[in-house]
Length: 67
Image 1 (tube, rainbow, N blue to C red):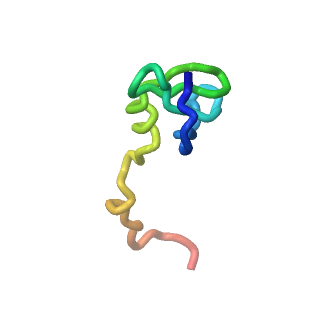
Image 2: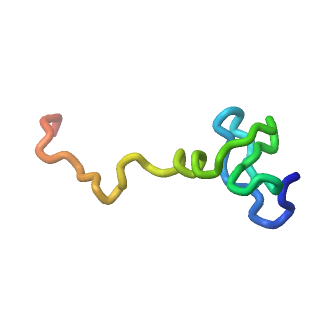
């Protein structure tokens, strides 16, 4: 059974893009409201993290191109 508290939506399902909510029976798991698949919350949260932090990105310098 799903939690009925506010803030139910957590992320998008990686399979069907449906809404994920915290699973009330299994702590640390999310369940899709559309396809009913379950996923570990840590795995879904890791998908949202950028691979390269934006602070470390610098624009390229002196690129050849049209003026």
